[in-house]
Image (cartoon, rainbow, N blue to C red; front, side, top):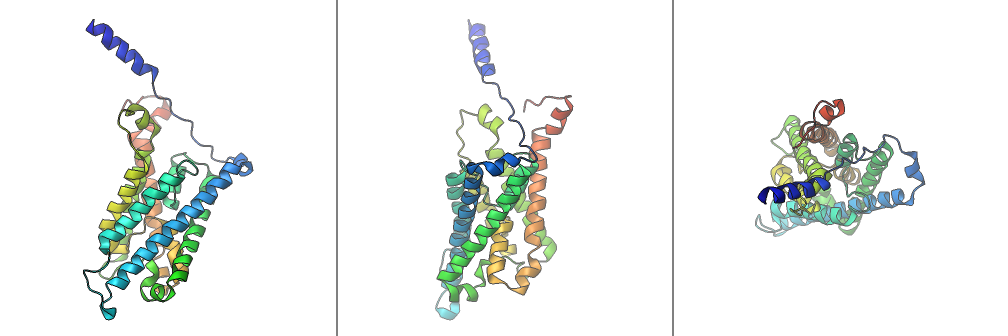
Length: 285
C-alpha cells in the first residue's frame, strides 16, 4: 500500500514536470509594433525617475541633518543604514509595481545581465537602458529643482571614489556588488525554481530589494554605491562635476562586468546551459 502511494505521488509530481521557456530572440522587430513594448519603456522611465528622486533627496537630507556648520550632529539624520533602506525599499516597491509590465529592471546592469541570459531581446535591452538613463536624469533633475541650494552644497547624491580608496578597490566593489544584485535577480525570477519549490512562496521583489540594501551597507563608504549605471549617470549629468566625471567609468564598467559574471554563473554553471546545449547531460539540480 505504501508503495502504491509512493508511486502515485511520484506520478503526480512528474505531471508537473518543468519545461524550459524558449530564449528571447536576439532581434525581434515585431516588438516595435506592440503597445505593450512602449508601455514597458514608459514603466522603466517612470520607475527610474521615482527611484532617483527619492534616493537622491534621502542622501541630501541626511547630509543636511548631519552638517555641523548648520547645527547638525553626527547622530542626526537617517544615517548610512537609512540610506541603504531607502535604496533597497524603493527597489522593492518599484519592482513590485512594474514586474508585470516591464519586468521591473530599473537598472541597465540588470537589463544587460538578462540580455546575456537570453531573457530579453537586443532591441528591448537597448531601449530599456535609454529609458532608464533618461528617467534617472529627470528624477535627479526634480530632486535638484525642489532643493537646489542643498543639492549643490551636499554633492547631489552623485557617485565618486571616496577619499582613502583607490579606483581599483572601487571597481572591485562595484563588480562584486552588482554580481550580488544580478545573481539575486536571476535566482528570484528563475521559473524552474518557482515550479520546483512552489510550496515555498517567493515574492521576487523582496530578495531583490534586500540585496540592494545589503550591498549599500557594504559599499556606501567606498563609492556611495552605484551598482546601477543609470543611477550614477543621472546624478553625474545633473551635478556635473569634474571629479564625478573622472570616476564615472567605474560605475559603468563595474556593473557591466558584475552583471556578465552573474549571468554566466547562473545560466552556464548553476543551470548548466552549455552542457544542456551539447545534449550530453541533463541537470536535475
